[in-house]
Image 1 (cartoon, one colour):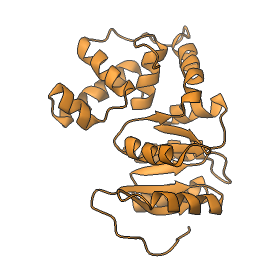
Image 2 (image 1 turned 135 degrees about the vertical axis):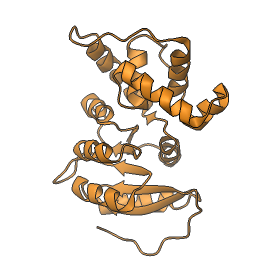
Image 3 (image 1 turned 90 degrees about the vertical axis):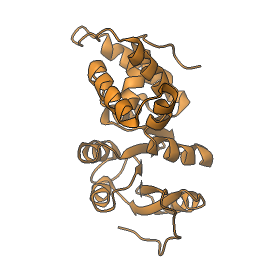
Length: 229
C-alpha cells in the first residue's frame, strides 16, 4: 500500500477516491490531477486488484479508478468482488485497452465508467463526479460496440423477454441514458429520492440489469430508446 504523505483538508462533501494501477508514476500523476479539485479527496492507492479490495474495505471510497491488466488480481475481477460487497461504490475503469470485450466485461461486472488512458484530464474528473452521483460515463468510441454486443445478448433465444414497460419506467430509462442522478430525477418528477431509488430497483429487475449502466445499454440495445447522438 502506498502513501504520498499528508492530504490537504477536504470539505465534508468531498468525493473519496481510490486509485488502482500497477504503474506508480501513473498513480502519482492521477493523484496530483485529482487533488487540484476542491471537491475530490484521494484517500489511497493500490498497485493491484487484491490490494484495491483490501483498501476498499478499509477506506470505503465513493469512487475507485481501476486499471484492467494488473498482477495477481485483474481489474475486472476486482471490480466484480468490490461491487458484490459494496454495491454503492462506483468503479470507473481507466485503461489503455480499447478492445470491445474488455469494455463489455467491465459493464457486466458493474463498472459505471470506462475511459481510455488518453482521455482528457477533465474527462477523468467528470467521470469521478458523475459516477459518484450514480450516473455513467463510457468512452463514446466504445458505445457502438457495446450496443451491438448487448443487442446480440438480448436477442439470444435463451434470453427472457422484457415485460412491457409503463410510461413512468420509460421516463426513468430516458433519464438514465441522459446521465441524470437520483436527485435530479426526483426533482424533475417531483418525487422523493427514496421513491426514485425504489422505482429504479424495480426497473432493473424488470430489465434483468444490475445497475444504471446495464439498464441504459440494455434499453438502447432492445430498441426501447433511440441511440444517443
